[in-house]
Length: 330
Image (cartoon, rainbow, N blue to C red):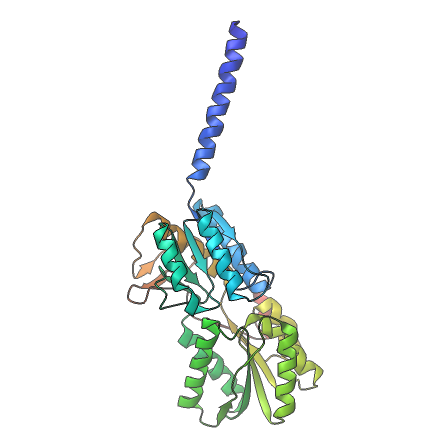
């Protein structure tokens, strides 16, 4: 073999070794996944975008996969598929808290970390919960804001999403608690459940206004129900008479805040929540012990952690109105 051929072979061999080394380095990236309650809606799209940014910043291989409708069985099948694929940390926005525990045990048996984000299953044995705000703050804030707009009295309808969604049901329980404790003349109707569709939410909101002519407000508890509730108020000609509100992203709520179909909405930054979720997953994979206050690159404020409850808290809820909605883009 000529020296020229030997040199070419050496170069090719070196390139192959470099490629193999690159592949090995890529394989060493921690794999973190997030499974939302449903794909294709602005709220979870924003969480995905935040997760992708965190993955790029932190050197994580990020996987985003979820059901096309709010089906707990489909969601758990996706979780199990991710575990089978060797994903080391999987976060879930839980649709059915009662069914998560066996999957948590399966993850532990595989040496993986299963944790929750956005919606919790506190009794499942999950590794931790990445919370957008405390459930208590979310439930109390929306009632306090609504009560101030209706004079502390009147009948209020509630249109939620999936009946088994832990986070939604918990927020409703704190709404009821706040109304009972502080606003005895505020009557909260029993929650109605629309699943994951705006169309069903619109029909329920319409029925609530028909059955309760004195209705003063409607709370859209799931992000998927926000457009339906607002559209129903518009269609019924009740703008200014029935106050729409809910846990709605600014971009989704903006036209309804501007035209008065919604008086305000309460939420947080889902892109920051997605970022924090991926950061938390990396800490779990790396075996890092969280402290009471944690500095997270990419987030402006330190993030608190309660070791007793296993809750990593993003922060306080935000209130969006026609006056401030243009300041936000998610």
